[in-house]
Image 1 (cartoon, rainbow over the protein chains, first blue to last red):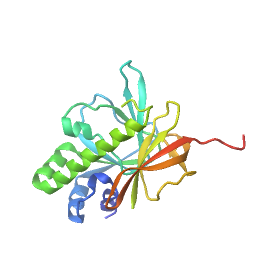
Image 2 (tube, one colour):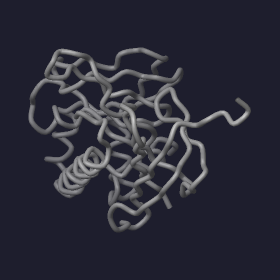
Image 3 (cartoon, rainbow over the protein chains, first blue to last red):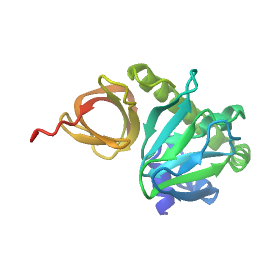
Image 4 (cartoon, chains in turn cyan, red):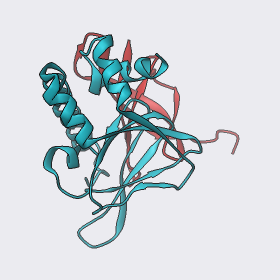
Length: 149
Length: 68
């Protein structure tokens, strides 16, 4: 139930009922990282989407000049790794934990897509929420002159 | 209510951050973005709320130790 409540607090899952959140909880796996642990690297194959439950992560990427640059920090309730889920491409950035005990929940792309096909209501709601989250990140980028995402 | 907050740092190259807060941020609050602490200087609503979620933009500046 604790995991269901955590999922309920993330916008990605907004609109899902308790039963649907329970289904997502069964395919979510907790991962805990310490400061400077790499969750995944830019360019790697993307096989999971993640939600930050605790702590913060740094989104870091190589810019056009080949220099590594921090684009954004994400804290509790935020989703990352969703681009690879949507477009099947490699990771667009590296993600690094910046606090000891940073906890994320990972959902495998295949499990997620299977669930969306089994329960199309979940698929509709979550794809919509994912689009809204990407929209929010774009608005943040437009407001943040340092964000070179 | 859950407050999804976009924190943007004024000036410099420090990137901002996004996180959910359980209490609405106020001007003067101290927030940690990445490894650095900042003070909130402005709060605006970015987009209309949806049910239990409110979407805010907060401008922050580096926290200055006034004892120095």
